Image (tube, rainbow, N blue to C red; front, side, top):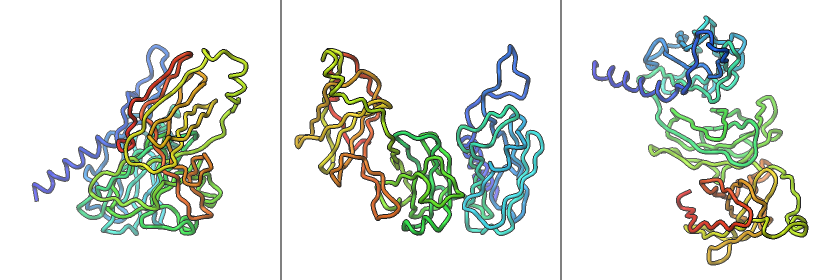
Length: 355
């Protein structure tokens, strides 16, 4: 019994390290006119070990600074959701949560503080704080993580446990939701199959088909004991297209850059190579021998990606709710590329198996 408690305590310490955000916020008045710009940090919970809890039990979350009471209204969520709403009390640096009375004993639940949660200076969380709880003596350990690419404002990742068809997504609320910047991670998931989509500026009051969404290239994700990575999504956006051909006609060729490269790994043709930033978008089709070349590029910083153009429309299609299509598979080069005038940049080997 003593050893079990030590194991739970060790897990608790590991959990606190995983959810605390790196910040240096202080409850003292800032010196020298500096303004506190760091988000609130979770210092501790009471009880410390959040297993073997009871229905309706109170949990105290203690932070390193005073919390803005008004921010609590829409910032505290419980996943997977239950009919009974979570109850909270405000007490300066503490938030006291009363658990619902209809939690299931064999589940791990997650108390999530989202990006609306803020301190007295209205500094909001940059990422969700997640706190696993259980009525049993164990916590699920499944992990789902990935990254969002393209152009977006405020993305969210929606996760359903089980294989859900697209009609089911419209009619059933997600089991888990997390706000993101560009990288995301779900922790404390049961090992199972999941359906996952990304949404930009997600509004839960609207039907899913009225939100801007992007699908993964696979219909479902199977989470086993190994961590799942590279669950990536892409959001397309209109670019400010000033035709490169017209630029070439009006400028000396020495004003432009060239990009050449060689693709390795297991892939299926046709593959489109796309080089883009907020102003320009260049494309070429990968040659049979795996080489590619893009000429006459306006100098600047770019993102390079390759995608399987299965319908030959030269667009990276990210899936639709009204048909059975998923996102076309895509790969993003790990580093951004800086192209200079009168310069040729060579990517000697881009191995898609490593992406």
